[in-house]
Image 1 (tube, one colour):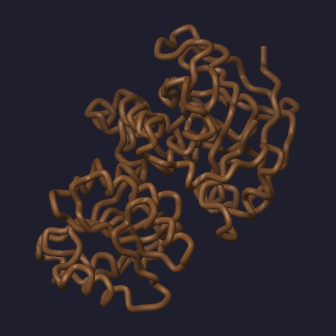
Image 2 (cartoon, helix red, strand yellow):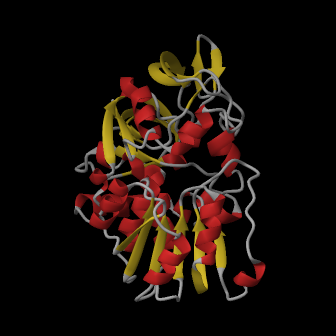
Length: 368
C-alpha cells in the first residue's frame, strides 16, 4: 500500500514550493521510510526548482534530510526502525569508483541523484492523485514529512545529537569539509584560501582551522560573513568588494601564493583569480557550480609551476564513515554548525527560500 504524506512540491520551473498531499510508494527491498525531523535548504535545490536542471517537474526536492527510520525494506541491514539517520547522496555501490571508496563519483551519479527523478529501474517513488511526480532526489526527496529513502543514502547517527543541528551534513557541510580534508590535505604551515563565505565556504574554514595550516583566508563581499569566518577560525579576511583580490592575497602570503584554494562561488572570474593566486604546486578545488556548459579561461603557462585545478562533488566523502565523524565533532562543539543554521517550520519553506536568496540566512533548516 502507498504511504500518504505531505510534501513541498515544485509544480514547474520557477514556481514556488507548494505544500501538497502526496503518496509514497511501498519501500523496496533496499529502501526505508523515514519520518523527517529536519531538512537543510541548499542552493542546488533552488537551482533545480528554477528549472536550471532537467529534473522532472512537478517534483519533490530536498537532499539534506535528517529523521527517524519508521520502516525498512526486506534487504536493508544497515538501519532499523527507531534509528536516527542523516540522509545524503546515493550511489550504485558496484562501479569502480564506488568500490574504491569514492561513491560521489559513481558511474550513475547524475541519474540516481540529480536529474533522473526515478529509481534506477525507472519506477517512481512519489505520486499524487495517481500521477507520478519527480522524486528520488539524491535518493531521498526530503522536503516532505516522510521520505522514501534509498539504503545507500542512509547514515545512522548518534541519537543524542539533535537532528536539526546536523541535517546540513548531508551535502553542504561535507562538501566544504571534504574539500579541505580529502583533497587539499594541508601540510604544516600551509596557507588555505576560501573563496565565498556561505555555508560551504564557512564549513571549509572550520575544517581548515582543524588542520596544520597556519594561515586560513576567507574571501567574501559581506562584512557580517567575514566577521563570522574570523570567529570560526579564519586568520585573515578579504573584502573582495573593497580591494583587488590578487593584491590582497599576495600581501597576506608574502608573494608566495596560496597552497590551497577552495572556490565556492560558482563565479568563473573568481575561479580565475583563485588559480592565479596559487603558489607553485598549489591546488584549487572547484566546488561552486555555474550553469552547465560554463567555461573559464586560464593562463596555461601559469599552470606549469605544478598548479592543479580539481573538481569536487560532495567532498569526495565516503558517507558511512565521514558523516558520523562530523556528527561527533558537532557533539563535542568542535564543529559549531549552529552558527550557520537558521530554523524555519516546514510550512515556511518559501520564507526560507527568500531569506537564503537575500543573504539573510546562511543555512536554512526546515523543521517538521
